Image 1: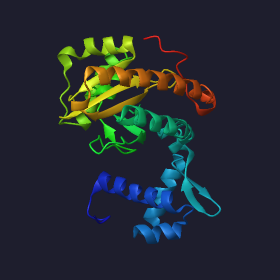
Image 2 (image 1 turned 90 degrees about the vertical axis):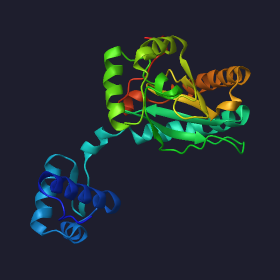
Image 3 (image 1 turned 135 degrees about the vertical axis):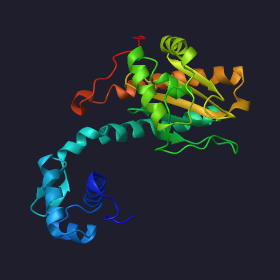
Length: 265
């Protein structure tokens, strides 16, 4: 798509996006280099970068433009994710080995849940999941668990945004609040072919870190009551171990407020 194929505000947004992409991948970048990369007049590039600089979205250094400090407030702290992944990876491998299913960690974002760590099932027939995969809230074990502790008004607001982002998702509004209240009390959720035919999952809340859960998922044909009970025991033990490790993270330094304990409130 050419930079000149759009008009008005859309054109400005497109140009800013291109400038930020270049700065993010090649910083520091001089004004001359930006002009060449985006193929726009120097005066246009200067005007846009100047506006971005005033809003602290980019910063100008002696060597060129770099991403600014304001962007740090728009994303979860990478330090937290990196620490969580280091702690969780060996634990997820153990869960996958002991349950025979795919194990993962999901975290709730504004209107979805995202996989930030995963260990694949050792079996040939398995749930294939990758770090970065995004799924809706309100459906599936993790999707229900991660909004169960919220107030009804907040649940409704998030589900409205989720439905806008995932228009093919059907939210069972009639029974959802009652189910979420039950999930809130027990601290875990189970889903059998709810989000996808043939797929089952079990999610257990990480009480120390808000909006984060451990999940085990796989073919629903294997998730009989005995297997489900086995998975829940393993997840509960793993969650306790992970919670203990997470308490060592200096949340206040990362600008976060962890749950001291899960009490259903």
